[in-house]
Amino acid sequence: MARIAVLLWLALAGVVAAQQAGNAPRFTGKSDVMDGKDLTAARRHFDAGARTYWHSHDNGQLLLVEQGRMRAQKKGQAARDYGVGDTDYTPPDVVHWHGAAPDQPLVQINVGFGGQTKWFDEVTAAEYAPKR
Image (tube, rainbow, N blue to C red; front, side, top):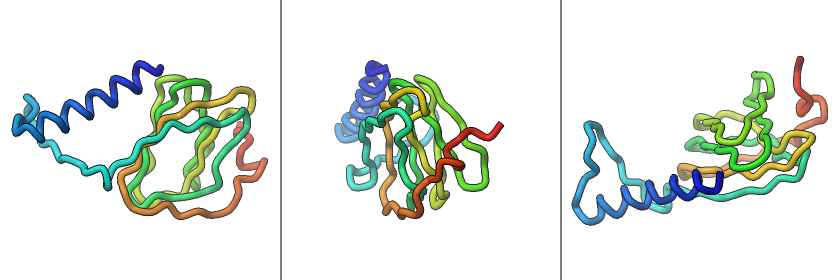
C-alpha cells in the first residue's frame, strides 16, 4: 500500500509540475491547481482501538487506508469499517471520527483541503462499537 501512497504523491507532483511548466495535463476536463496552503497530506498511525474525537473540517477530508483496518463514522450514520486501499471522503463541516478497528492497528493517509478543524467530544465506547 505504500506504493499507492507514493503513486498518488507522484501523480499530484506531476500535475503540479506540468502546470507550473505551462503544460496542461492531456485530458478533457478542468484542473484546479491547489497551493500548498490549501492542501495537506499526512500519514497517521493508530494503535488497535485508537481513534480521534468527533470533529469536522471546513473544506472536507479524504482518507485512504494504507495498512490495517479503519473504522469511521459520520454523525447520524452507522460506523463503517474500511480495508487496505479503501477510501472515505467526508464533505465540509460534517462531524465525524475515524481510527483503527478494535483488533488491529491502522496506517491512514489523510488529505485536507484547507480551513480549520473543529474538535468536539470524545467518541464513547458505545459509539465506537459496530452497530449490528
